[in-house]
Image 1 (cartoon, helix red, strand yellow):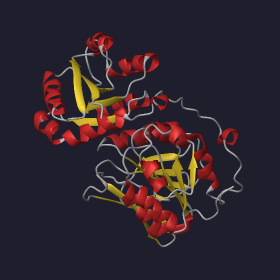
Image 2 (cartoon, rainbow, N blue to C red):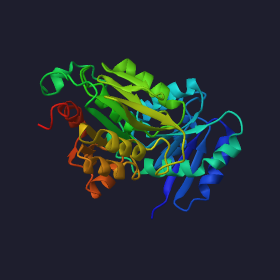
Image 3 (cartoon, one colour):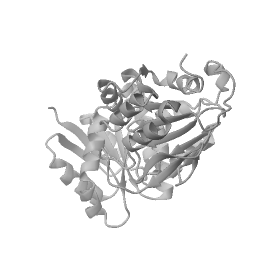
Length: 353
């Protein structure tokens, strides 16, 4: 298998040194260069272009966001953001994801060497996932705040049974852009949504806040006991599992700690399997872009329980991993392009059209 050519762009000499040494030990990764800022990186990239960039976002001379915009406009290349784990860093990193970056690896301000060694597997998976990214889907998608009636088919009357229908969504690499494309197209009258997006701790709160500002519906980082209700999307917090529960006629979420499931926390499988048990045929399950197989078995459980199920199609995925595995298991009743998923969500209120 051809080695993945990686360039590291970070103003910290320690980060460059540790990451280079760590990645050099992997047989399928070749570090072809390091640079202290994007301008130095561009000089080196003209001589040998990398398959994947590992990029800091706060650097001298040219920040990572400006560099990303230039890169995606001139020669789209998969980028993994290596970002400091702070609230301010979360906002900046989300800007990078919106501009086309496909992954995040966090770095703390203290204990950096030990942390980077401990996060070696996570970084390697992020690089491998980025290397498989569909470059056609890397360009940032414009936010369209259009009235839903202009882009979606009519779905009949508004819901009268406010806790009966819900939508459970799981996604990973490329999912931040995909979720933005879907949620910004939903009207206030839509089923309640529960969502797992593979994302590190602290970033999900900023991600939910960003979506809440862009969308007609309410978007929140989930807290234990939050109610699932029409016009609201609950996003599982990074580093914690989220599962669906029911209290009488109302759906709620339980947010809890626990071991990694399918190599993730939060795990899509945890959410979808709980949805299968609690909601059965009253739910719609959706698996979208991402590497690996998290959520495939959970979506199969949902279909076996009578739920409607959808997998995103290959052409519109950044990484066609999770949907592919769900399709192979027979978990997906329908395979839809990203732009068709909002209509499917609304149609789930009254049955498939």
